[in-house]
Image (cartoon, rainbow, N blue to C red; front, side):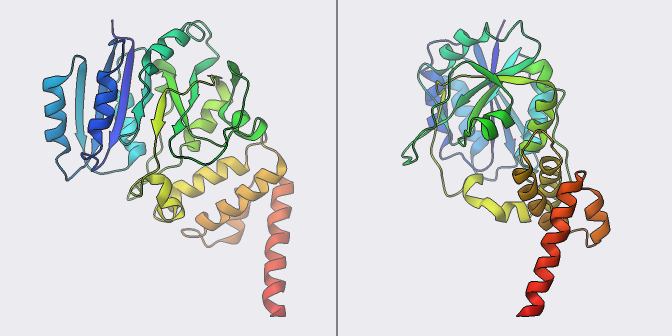
Length: 292
């Protein structure tokens, strides 16, 4: 039985997919399948995948959908993955030569623990000048604990137990093609934790056509999803008050693009302390404008 699915969402990345394919060919273990969800590419992605199929010594599954965004591609994948475990490897990333063997060696550490949803592995960012944060290996934490308690700021490869991940689909707003992953991960954190390992499974480079480089622009094009993500962050009592105050300002900015009602926005803030903070914040802004 195939244990693992490598899931790759892609959009107009035919030029870089061979790098990922070659890294899959190089794996010492072949107990996996590769699922590609093509999010409406207009290049020769399908032709490239057909060429891969003629060379691969592992199963390849190709699904085409209308362009709707990575989060919808993830929902599509969740409906089609049949293996016990899966991980997402973006189209511009590639696996380390021993990546899948490393995963196999770690699965026994989580397989019998129902409170652990998966494994978290730091992505190795190539050509990066940033020093890596040293975190004790094999610790069991939520994604928020990893970021806010252990101050890990890098990207992660997440290897999920499929039956648990299927409980967490991304919400979809008509016309919006982006959703912050925290919308799902914050819900996961309420119930489950990850086994964090120090070893990297995936290599990555930041590219100009990637989501990371598009930053705030892509959030402005998906304000309902952005407002939802920051609303859940500002109302997460597991986060410290300074973080929640900052998230409240982000929530307010994106919520205001579709909702101009001050009271309506204020009511969505659950914490009295954060509400008072935002009221004072706007009073100071108003007074500041009057003084100029």
